[in-house]
Length: 424
Ligand code: AMP
Ligand code: GLY
Figure 1 (cartoon, rainbow, N blue to C red):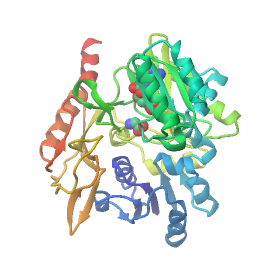
Figure 2 (tube, helix red, strand yellow):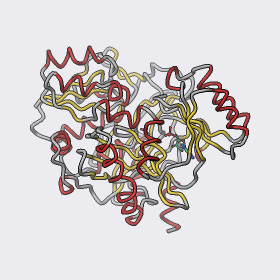
Figure 3 (tube, helix red, strand yellow):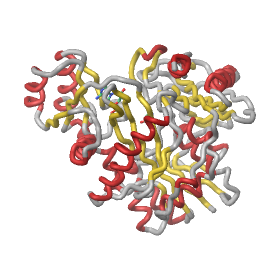
Figure 4 (tube, helix red, strand yellow):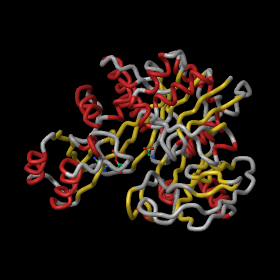
């Protein structure tokens, strides 16, 4: 089978490596892929947002199946376009991907169907938003409606910060049209959990839970990033919490999407906060998380392609999706300066990996046979083990064997999770 994977980050590398475990897979094309992914797939320089280019590639190369993982092409309707020309896809259609593409859509969906989330108000006019801020409780959260590279949520500690956020989004349009409408929402607190799930629109099968580390610096300080590391499973996500989430959040969401005529088939990502009032939805994503996929997929015992085909064909069952009992840790090696300005072009040397170790490359290119850094997040070093502390130790040991100049990482990936385990 020939598989086409759209995207070119660490998440896509993890997806490709998981797909390759199926012996029926004879070829994988990655658009655009990257210099590290090139070791596992044929990469072509077509951007994930170049829908016409991808469709033309699919007509030429006739893949048997396509996996679309980044948010933009999903929200833009790539799956609809590929299905139209007869390429079966894993990933939601445009009318379902809106669950991530518009935070106002998803908020209204939750409000309408009684799915627990932060209270909020919608604004299309900056003056009305600023007036509302006068009587807000702080901190408060300001969110751009549309996609904003993961930077569309601002926690404002006082009215001055809130006014700046509203002005940047609505007046200066730093996120373009994504900030034309904003949500101002109640600040929630509690541990955060990422739960990726497979759903075919009827059945929802949650994957092993995970924890992202979004801030750039140790102790969750510094700027928000795309994610500096992950661990799985998330110790805060107990069986009891899982049961409650299935009942109050996961099933109601899938049913609500069906009732709205927006059947969701693909990976539905629940970003949850476990508040004192129970679990609440912080955000939905219409795709695998990055770097959540890098810890979840190495723990998947079942065959990923088989699951993806069942999702596409609406015949997913719980027993198709099995995970290892152990734990996994992913430490991101980034370019110093990320998420702001950073230099690239440094040569990367990678060690051989052993059993239960993986290196998923995110920002690198091949130049004359050399792998050079080419992005903010360069790669993820991933290890699995029987226990979380074992996985963390192995991931950091693997990091020590990877070299490039100007590298930066957090030293405390998983530390909070270990503390939670020791306090339980
Ligand atoms: P989002 O872009 O919606 O994923 O938000 C990014 C991050 O902002 C989340 O991972 C949370 O840490 C934080 N956040 C978002 N919404 C809230 C909220 N209502 N209360 C507290 N923190 C939030
Ligand atoms: N790691 C968070 C995300 O993929 O949105």
